[in-house]
Image (cartoon, rainbow, N blue to C red; front, top):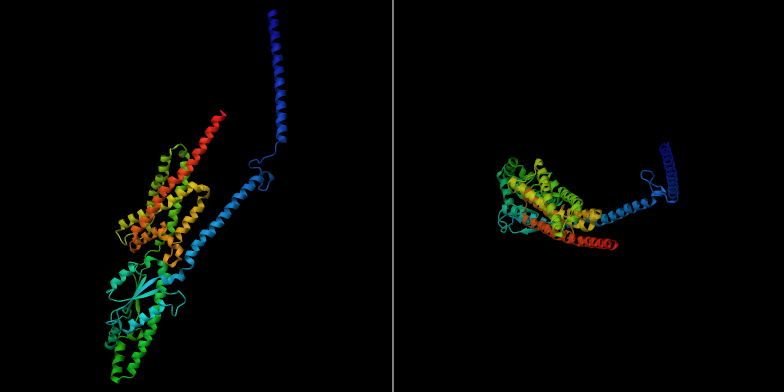
Length: 486
């Protein structure tokens, strides 16, 4: 009985204690919940994700930061636009005012000592043109009359144009005046008026200069000169016949019927394009493709900046510096080779100067050197500028290079002579040698590109050391503060 009673009493007591504890716990929880509700009511309302409109007061401070970032970007872009876009516009804006800087030769072989009437007329016309007579201001080339003994054959003249001594040359061929007189007197039906004068030019050297200035201005001058001279020589010829004997007039009419070209167009000319601009697709590798090279190398820079941030904090400086220089150089190999391969289906004339395989290999090598020169420059500058501002350097890099690659630097203000030492100009010049067989400057071109690479191989570790030193000092200070707290 006692034991049973005690057991029942113990159970009742235990239940009573648990009930009291439960009630006390619920009361405490209620008080805490009430306090939290009061605290939430007193705390300022903050922005909640996915719950606000753009103009809500809760996101006012975020909206202010948003407008600040966007506004500063617009301002920086406007400044960059005026600084660099004006550079490109300026490279093209005054080209027509510098046309007299394009030099040409005039060689007179007409007659024993150049006393032929046609040769004298051509020389006089081109000398007057060089002085700007009869043409708008600066709308002419500068012509130098060269003694025929210094360039004894037309092959020598053609070589002088290809070797870039001059941009063009006009040759009055040997005994041109005498050959016309002979054809008239003999009725030579095979007489070709175009053999009188030859105009040599080199379109592959620069197609814009050739198509916009050299060919139009020279052909216009030749046509006007020859038209006037043909009218004069015909007038003299028919005047002589009118004053001559009847038999002479009858003979002349017979010979004219046999060779009518001797009076319809006594003298003409032929234009010889020594290095034709053979493929329109070549424009892709000469200018626009150079921009693609910069963009491709820049994408490697951006990706490398993100990727190296994962491992760089754990690397010693020497290892980190080597990684920053040599990893991009390795990455450029497949990129440059792929860029070169893309040109093969479009029949770019890699065999113009060397074998097709040799020309393609050289093209790839110069693309790689160009990518290294341009890519490592962005790799160096991203160290200071960071990904946030590197795009502004990219704008400057593209425009400063492209500004000197489209038209000859000689047709630009003297400021643009910096282009001789910039990558894109030298890549384009080397490509012209490979594709069009123009004068070989590839030794100088390669030297400029490698100089850029070497410069970046110095600046990348230097800039890395400067920035990393600050990071290391900040890390040391942080560790020292943590030790003080402990």
